[in-house]
Image 1 (cartoon, helix red, strand yellow):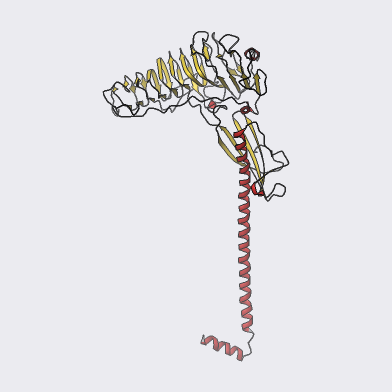
Image 2 (image 1 turned 60 degrees about the vertical axis):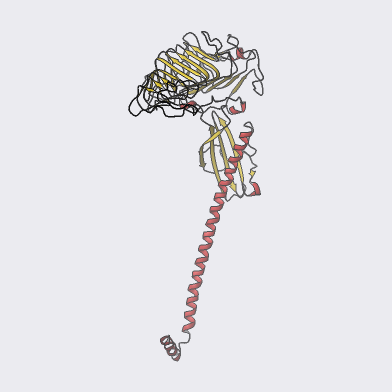
Length: 502
């Protein structure tokens, strides 16, 4: 400090008294520049933050359009958007901060919702963002064969896929299941054949990487057969496990994995566990079908009798007869609802689908029984090179007494069911068929394989019936109202707004 004062005094003595002013101005200039840079940086950060906030708010606006559409569809699928993409008047966000256009449309088993959000308004937007969501029915068809009561499979039947029988299961005479067998109910499983993990077939394709298990919960346990996976004879908590008990036991089953039972295991192998509590499999309800013509918006719906709206309560004694005029040789794609006033197993009261060939995806829903042939009828095929699905729903509830010619079955075929799955190595060609009834289904003497799934209140399959499960029918409209989001994608937001993402 003393040195500085001496230098300053010397400079003043030499007449350099303006030096301090110059120094001060330089320092002030540097500080001003620093302040300007700091303010500019802060303003830029604020601007970027604000733009980011508005960008995110625009996405929220578009999401509001999606949420509004989902709420509306859940209440009434026939209602259309009040502010469609092709319209001129947008919907307003609560509080007026943003506007959106939204459109939805159904095709087959999907509903596609497209929403474009604008912030702060559609006429003078800072940002626009467009998103598309696809909704599909929840997957409920997971089994190749499902019986809500008993299930019998005999005489060389081959099934690729899991099998479910609520109360009892019997397979006999060289029958094979590539998959697992679940029987949660009161009785058990008689395995007079093989349950395997892998199986090659030149007619219904290869079956690989299955569990190959048998799992029961009823007093019958598991009897006989070869099980490549695990065998589990479960029991209710009211039963006291006992390794000597012949209830909830495994008897005469050759188990490749581990055998586990609440009762006795004969023969007993290394690693097996007997006399220990094991739960049975969880009970699964037969999916419930609800008729709603609005489910099929975007598809061709033909109702017999011709009525608007198409309801189950509007029937006609000529409904089946009128539907019979639809050509079976090439049935056009679409949805067919047949509400017969006097459904029965007479020729006048049942739906005859012998020799069916479909031109695309076909859904048939009826209160009448379904008849699929009794004399080596041709296979169910498609003229669509890309493949097609066939959904057949019979809500007929007869006595369940099946016999040659149909008896009082809900869905019946003898010598006639062959859903042609096409090339066994191509899962997407040919026909994938879902046959569903809360009544009884009976298929006999099947010489050719089928692709899809069979669901019934009770089921009887005999004499060479071959079935391969197809994932193409796991999601079907009408079975439960629940929809799940299977796709969310952001699309380029351009004007005029297209209804699809490209």
